[in-house]
Amino acid sequence: MLSNPLQLAFLSKFLKKNLQHLLFYHAKSNFKLYEQYVLNKSQSERLWEQYCCGHPFFTKIQQSLGHRLPLDSYLLKPIQRITQYHLLLKEMIKYTHHEQERKHLQESLYVMLNILSHLNDVMHSTQIVGYPDQMQKLGQIRLRGENCIISKEKRRGTVYTRTKTCTRDIFLFERVILLCKKKDEGNGKSLQYQFKEMIK
Image (cartoon, rainbow, N blue to C red; front, side, top):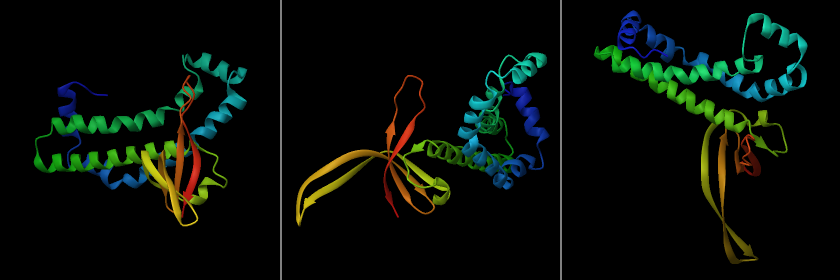
C-alpha cells in the first residue's frame, strides 16, 4: 500500500482521464468473481487439508521456490487484496484536488465499500450450519442483520401466556429469510450460525 504523499500524488495524476472511475465504478460487476471465490473458500480449504497439506509434492515446490508460506496461505491473497482497494482510494481522495476527479474517486470508494460489505455478508452466510436443504436454492444474499432481538408470543389456545425473547442473526436471501443463532466457541474455532427458522 502506498503511503508516501508524492507517490500518491503521482498515482492520482497518472490515473487521469477518469481511469480510476472506469476501474472501480463501471467495472463493479467484475468484482462478482470475488463473491464466487468467497463462496468456494471453505471447499478449497477442505480440499487442501484432505489432499495437499503436508504432501511431499507441494512441500518440494514450496522449497524450490523459496516460499516461506505454504500454498493455502496464498489462497487468502485475493480476499486480502480486495480489502486494500478502498484504502488506496481514500488516500487518493486525500491528495486529489480536481473536483470532478475527486467526485469520481468518491463514487468508486462508495462502490468498493458496498462490495466489501456484501462480501462480508457472503462470507458469514457460508458459515450457516443445520439448514435442511441446499443453500444454493436460496439465491443471493442481500442483507445480514447482527444480534437482532426477536420476540415471540407463546399462547395456549386463544390466551397469550408469555413472551420469549432471543437474539438471532438474520440472513436475507433472494427467496427466504433465515434466522440463525450465532455459535462462537472460541479457542480459534471459526464462527458458525446454527439455523433456527425460515421465513418465506
